[in-house]
Image (cartoon, rainbow, N blue to C red):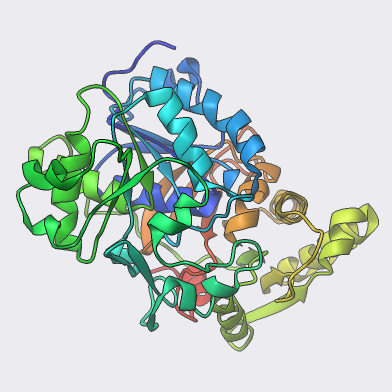
Length: 433
């Protein structure tokens, strides 16, 4: 692939909802950005000559380490060849992972093998999302874009009970240390007050991965300066969208990017279709609120729609009839943990149902809720890439779909992680600004 010297940042997200989160923060910084569903080829990048940054919405959050390696090694090589100055492996802001599922440690090992940086920075906090890292320990607000209480990660009412990767350790060095053999250092919250050129003074020679605390938004610009200065060629990093915020803030200060503040007005979209595979109590509260305010629900038998084409067809017919009556719909799988049902199967089924609804009804806007299932749902809908339309709730922008399917191309889409939003989230997506 011919290198493109203009690209400042390329990021690989471990799921679709997290990838649109990163898309939002680097777009807010003024970077012209497209988020692809697969690593773009040189020819694809030529079709977007205006890009400052690009992302890849992956699906590694739901995969085994071996499956991750088969995807990430060639993906990172392709991103390296694109000439991007910074390459970021974007993870959920609560670092959802384990040694057997969505291993962030495996991603670190793959990044080290391809980029061969002396140090791999891992940004622990994303303050604007209510994620705070202090002396290596992660604290998370209950609900992004809400006024929920803040909990240490291993005591978080939702994350400690995650159905696939429950958080049992708040110290990210210990959490990630179960997933890689690399040695961890720390740039603690007190060090952040020192000049950036002194940050590495206390790091040991054998510390290959450096976790960075983040408590306040104001600290991000110095973090961006440090990450940007680690390598003169290509630098690999790991973390939530705090990386995009940090680098974006620093590039704004240096004049490489001009912060964007004006966005397209979001109009009302009626009827609105919401497809949810999320088991989060935050999403459950949002569904309950929506049912009491302008929405009807269709609760799915997840096992049936994943294994029975007739059952899926019947659901599609029911949804289309209600949408034709201008009913705003929330289609969800309930709050039960579904054993032996993969994120791939469930996400693909939800995406197929949404695609058929859009093809029949010609909807303006669709919401997909659920981090583990979102990547598969997007692919089943036939989405090849998205661009940001406007911010709505921090971490979940409204986007425009790019697709070879004429019904999907131009569709307004919103991908919401389980922890995102206050209880009136779906009503906000219905009414816009």
